[in-house]
Amino acid sequence: MKNNRQPYTILAYYAFTDIDNPKEEISLHNAFLNNRDITCRIYISEQGINGQLCAAASDAKEYQEWMLARPEFCNMPFKQHLHHEHVFPRRTVKYRCRLVGYDREINLAHRGQYLSPTEWKNMLEQTQKVLLFDVRNDYEWMLGHFEGATLPPCKNFREFEQYAEKLAKDYDPKTTPVMMYCTGGIRCELYSSILREKNFQEVYQLEGGIIHYGQKVGAKHWLGKLFVFDDRLSIPICEEESPVIGMCHHCKKDSEMYYNCSSMDCNTLFLCCEDCLRTYKGCCSSECQNSQRIRPLHHQHPHKPFRRKHHYQDLT
Image: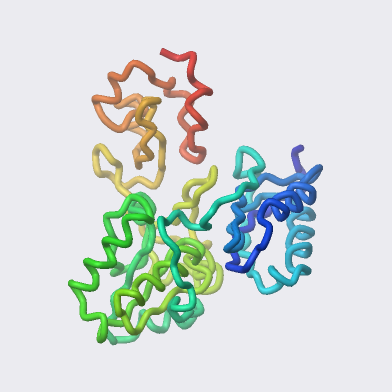
């Protein structure tokens, strides 16, 4: 169902809260979402909820009201953007044993201290020495990050445990203040706790993540764009312009456009300029260019990731 009268509202939100019966909560969600102009990606577990939702403005408003009226979600903040179309291909509400992909339980009672966007900006501008740390995958910070941030070469969140051990060796945990940030805040909830386990004494996390910072403070101290896990792929954090830091995977020219490799056996997400996109036929390497199963170049879209491989299974 299309909404031609007004833009769609995109909501990002999470809450660590006890949910005794996640399957029942999934059923409640599906019943609420039914017959509404909503697409989403919502994960629910005994730990709580982690959601992204795109809806017609009235449906987004009603969803927020429905959630905030419930005791377990009454304090959950929503971060909001507007867009001209849906940013998710479908409606997905499913169970996950852990809200963030990790292989063990983390004691969230030891998480770091929240800094509001204004407090974060002020601390960045102090002369005090801090470890400014990006808690996102490498393909995310390649597109944009805070000026002067430490950028871990991690491709998924599970690799950050080992990196925490490296940080504890490279820095004195007792005397090194840590400022960490991620897209919406949820990964910092876990990683700040992990660093506290490694005996880091002074750990701060950006409340609401980069999204909240851009909405409240703007682009001060930020470089590039923000990677998001929906059809937009990359967005500015605010209306202010920010320097381009993304580079084409092939020629290293400035680029902020992500594509999936046209080889269906690769599908790697990579930054690419328009010239190299044509030269390499949408592929991330010469080897992939010679692959047996290649999507036609006209399927490439800089703002929409490819869907599952079976949509192209008839191609050779």
